[in-house]
Image 1: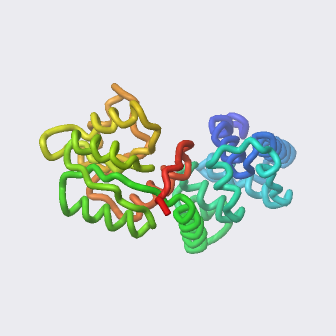
Image 2: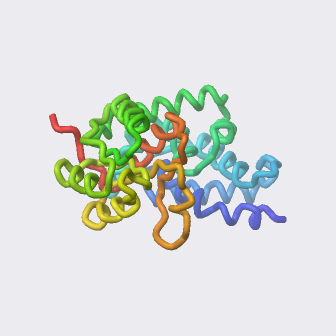
Length: 264
């Protein structure tokens, strides 16, 4: 298979990544063009691996690094909130964060793309996560009927610097608590205490409010039916704390309506 055919399916995603990395569609596309031109002139420079997507991103980073990695998002004046938050991160932290949070690479893959060790990548990603969490501290509603799990989530959320507005155990209680003190994020189970549905609660909330919702459930298959819009953030139980923390950071970072803050 030719390089063009091998890399073609990945180019739209690389373009998305380049735009997020630079903060500018124009600048991101310029880096893509430079990468493709360099690739056409010197195809043997691409590493010969079974993973064409990883090889493409690795080659892009070679070009990115050798051209000075100029950032143009500050001059565009049109960056959305997520773009602006990205530009506040140091370039290497931004790369480490985006490769895993946006592009879905594993830590091992991301470290290979960046030419660093997995430990170095882990530290960079942690630094980015801390900066994001400090900026995006918000109010969180927990919809969960199991007391131990609810307490674990509350502790985890507060450790990240957020404030828990309440813990709902039923559909009706979830709507009441949301209306009384609207949060900037919802953590939601789908099977609640009185047999009511967290899915229905989330649907009712989203009907009137644009807020990120993370589903944390022992029944993920109930949300992956294709019969209604499927959630962006879905964490199966039993969950790992780091998985929930990463999902919270990503949900707040990339959601355009993020803005419900802790009252001073």
